[in-house]
Image (cartoon, rainbow, N blue to C red; front, top):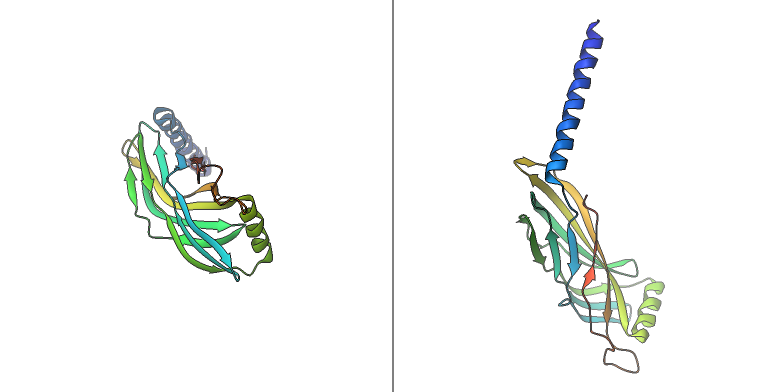
Length: 193
């Protein structure tokens, strides 16, 4: 047997061994997908579009649930962005990093306030239509850099997103009192495992 065959055989054995170890760790740990909700306490306090300027104040209470028994999560960077009709109007990069233990729920509080110039006529049209209907659809995206820890093993850093499609009721043009609650708890899409 030549040197090349021995090296290939050794490399193949290492790859198979690492694969078996990874499979055993996965079966022991059994990771579950993280769950996330925008809670009913979230508020769209101001959302006015006048003279192509959007004035906004949006306070979010976002719960992140780690349902795993043996996996903890390190959130190294958390950033949030808010969009309306595919046009970003808010960004929050001041969210604190944290460690989330086993079977734990943590609530973070992205907040958006300010003004944004809107030059897209389709955004203005959508705003006017939704204002008449008594609600606004807002998209929230949470950008995460995180690590997982299982047993004594810690993974490299991964980038993930949490995406939430939100509807805030504001009352209709002819009836300023909202027919429905301002906001109801909304499940978000999480792309973890």
